[in-house]
Image (cartoon, rainbow over all chains, first blue to last red; front, side, top):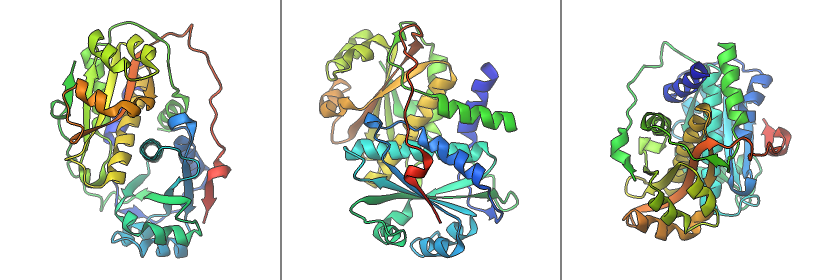
Length: 175
Length: 175
């Protein structure tokens, strides 16, 4: 029990953004297991307001890439998870977006647990309507929340940078 | 490696909302380890736009409880995590709220990994300004995002309900 707990805590703390990939197929079973973790995220009233486009086709990835300054990363990863908020399933904007954050985080942790790498691209939201159009999704019904690029980590290019976070005391108060 | 991966996936999938608690102290080291997992959540531009009030004092819990129809749960849990968005640290509302969702999810998973239980209360957002006032936090600077009640699980009262989630095919498209 204690060691399983530590494994999870270490996994959460060791996850980092990965931007350099080796182009290698990820099998569908692995992809489904990652998405399955997203599926179990909590959401207010269990609304599960997520919609996910799973993209490995190079042409579609190129179309996504054209909408981001990080297009090279998007194209170099075998897989893109394109995450939308299903506006008709949702019922409260703040709570719906929080649920999408939990959905994304579960998938990022699953990617890491699988020994793969990912980076969460938010900058592409500046072109959210254009990305919706690629998938023939009406921007009135589906709002882009982010793109996760997922792939085999290129360890030689990926620098082991020190990640920085504020210390606990900086953002906590005890009562 | 494979078994560690499965442990993590099982942990993510077995987490559920817990609403029945045994009132028992949770030590500060455990609390810090849970919050530490929140701290390593990703955020756009690494803005880390979170602010957390950690509440175990019964009087303060009562004040929080008065703002929710789930007040009995809030008071019965040893611990309340009151999560705010730090509006001055944030820079893009959607991305900031997504990061708070990831922050909350990491803490919920850490709670579960520790063998404790939690429920994420969003309904209290209807009184978000009043909750900010309890902590003397200006609603212009800090916006309530949710309250997590955390405690030892009362297994005899906690019913093992079937949790429901949409199947993968219902919210995914492959390209």
